[in-house]
Length: 284
Image (cartoon, rainbow, N blue to C red; front, top):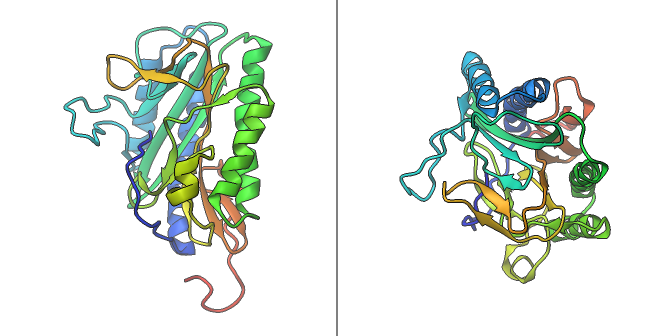
């Protein structure tokens, strides 16, 4: 779930606050794992959405997508997950349409737990999927991995975004530029905007420093062919202009003095471990 109208300076989080976000992140990871288990040929996305809603509610979490209407359009998002198929890039609405062999299902969801948010997305191949579509998923996942690695050793976001963009383009695919990631914390959408590419706007006034306490939802969207997208009449579902497949992946990532924490990693994954500095008072 993305927006592009936030320009304020980012609000840095303490290690304690990142730890609270990590608890929300574990629940989001459980939700995505549940979706992966359910996403088989014949399954309906409306049922997958209901299962995620049940999981959040039963764990005392607030789903962040359902009812979301940032521009007060009178058309709030109707589900707790964005479930986007094939040429649908993001913001797909769950339906009765059964999943089929060869589909690419993008699952994006977020929740608030104990006052703190986490947001993540995966792309799931359904049944037997053509090799080029599987390669598209791999490139998107590797692009996110590039971001995680580079965030820990670069000074500016533009340096990370440039490497993400180059990785996608060298693979022969296209980066979606109409939608970007975002800061996250007590609210799902906070500053800064987090593009997966470099353009004049980022270079002139949109760049930001990578410093301890910064928490970002980084979410590359990679199209098979062209980067152009459009929104359907439901006012939510974004599709590729040429009808070719797209892939979307996302993690909530926190920069700390000891490296990048994958806030939405599965429970037990070392990538989600928060290392506390030994020096007294280092935990802001």
